[in-house]
Image (cartoon, rainbow, N blue to C red):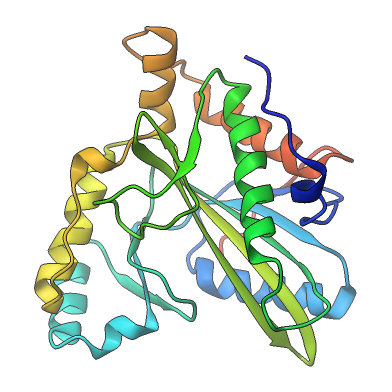
Length: 260
C-alpha cells in the first residue's frame, strides 16, 4: 500500500527535521528528557525529533493531583509496579512501558500563543498514517469514545485507537517552542493497559472509565491487514524505521544509548 499523500498546507505546519534520534534503552524519566530536548531547541534553534520508550508506569496531567484519592492511587500504582508521573500539559492518563513508542517533535515558534494547532495535528497524523501505510496498515484520524486520553486527533484502525497525539506551546528561556507528541501502541496487550488506567481512576476517586476494546496495537492491526496469526519478529524495528524515515526526510536516524 502506498503512503497517503500529505497536503502542502499540512506539511508546512511541521519543520524539516535533520534527523530522528532513536533511543535504544527505555528512558527513566521521559518527561524530564522532553524538557531537556525543548530547552535544547530553545538554545540552538534546531528542530528536534526523538523516538523513545519509557519505563513502565502511568503519566497523568497535573489536574489529577486534585482528585480525592490522589495519594492513595499513587501508592497503589507503585505497589502494582505502575508508578505515576505528572506532566505539565492537559489531556488524560496514558501508559508507558513495553509495547508503547513515543515520538516527540519540538521546534521554535513565532509565538508561545498557540497558532495553527489543527494544521500541526493534521501534519503529525498524516505523517504517522503514511508510516503505517508503508506497513500495509490503513488508519483514520478520529475520536474513539472509551479510549484513554481520547481526542479528535487519534489515529484509529477499524474504529479502535492506535495512536494518541498531544501538543504544547510554551516559552523556554524567553524563546517560544512547540512540542508535538504521539503515543503509539505498538504491541503487547492494549486491553491490559486500559485496565491499568481504570485501576488508577478507581483508586483516585475519578468517574472516568475506559474500554479495552476501544484500543488496538500496530501488531494486531498488521495481522488483521495481512491475514496472519502473528506479526513478523522484526515489526517493531520496521515500524521505527518507517517513522524515522517519514519525519527525518533528510538524513538517516541516529541512535542514542541515553537512559534518562
